[in-house]
Image 1 (cartoon, helix red, strand yellow):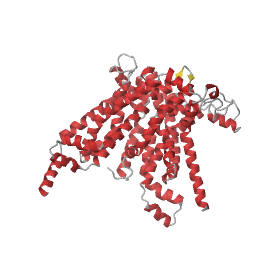
Image 2: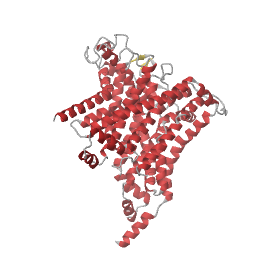
Image 3: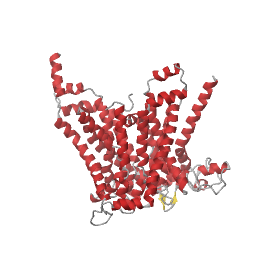
Image 4: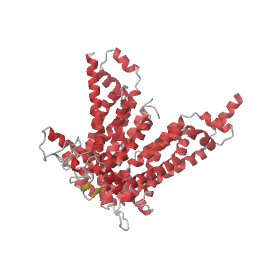
Length: 279
Length: 304
């Protein structure tokens, strides 16, 4: 009995420690968001308490006097376009790979997965010139063009697993009923894979909101930025940080993404584990 | 039925390579043009004297590599990239193992705890990092305030978390760990739930305690999944530029510069495309090693 209690205490202590460590920056964003500057910038005051009543001033500044809404809009727009391109290219490719049996199909699948490991920090220098030559510099179209190269490999990999789990007999039956192979793919396979496709949509969209290197490199005007770069780089005037508004912006931009990603997490993890888990 | 079965089989067996190729080639072309071609271009740049706004490019052989290998900032950046990656992986593995054990069994509020623990991974990196920049502020740092409150440091003489070389390096490692612990934890959790329940139970009947079960049974079974977590963690830390760029911008005096951040500072901000490309090519050996190890892990666990 005693042993059980001590177990429980250790368990709660471990969880509490990690929850505080990992979630603290977000808690701290909430505090800063609603604090008056006089209170925020006073080292005498206990920073955990409100010495002046909570204020909406930081939020007003953020929505009224910065490009925050514009950045959110840019991010949403790029996100939607990249999702569309990713789906159009990766669904057929994943299906072809899933049904392409034999060594070559597997090798190509692994090859595709490995291209996911190529980081933006390896390619941003040459790509910045490609973007300049194409005349896309400083526009969000540069990101619409480049982001699918990051999202397609992982999406193909995720969808391949999905398509493989669909029995071939289903398409065969559809083809007996007079559909072509491509027709069977469109009318039978795609509809029952909707949950896999949704996973790819969420993965792609969150990746667009998280990416930093390409957006920083390709786009310099403030108004064409994405949230991930706009907030940390342009919400600073000269050397002055508007910490209250800055933290508010981080919070507002992070939470929805975090919430949606959380719902789909188990599926992404299944993709990451490369089959090292047989579940 | 027998006749029908035969017919279905014949249609199923009729592969359509042309259709397969048509469905696969657009994606392949995209990847080739936006990953393959830029990589080749990076190699070209590294052997040239390309500059932003410069006119013609010339072949200069190994000149770029010679000059960056002699530059102290490059050596420091290479060293930092390795130190940050190794330190972060060790800390993350220890923490993620502990945390995944604590999260394994269901308890009340597990969903909420999981959401809170996952926040650093699922929120955009650049935004989480700017949150840390506020926590580690030179004057208004909450950590400094707590240390003053506990009488560990004197008021107004608190540490400059991001302004002193050693502390800045520690801060960068801290933020990397903070971001990676959730990711590794969920991966390990996936591996842990895949351990057949009978094995630890049988071990318990044979008298194995918690530590023995953990180290002699669970960890060996979990080796493939641990490797996956470490390999991904290594890629994320070694090739990351966001955390360093936002937290310290490589400073103070290049003391936290890493290969990617130095490549950015040289190639984009300093307009020296050739040197920047040469610096970023130093990521390639590590990436190849990781790709190789990843394939071995996948091969061992008999999926391929």
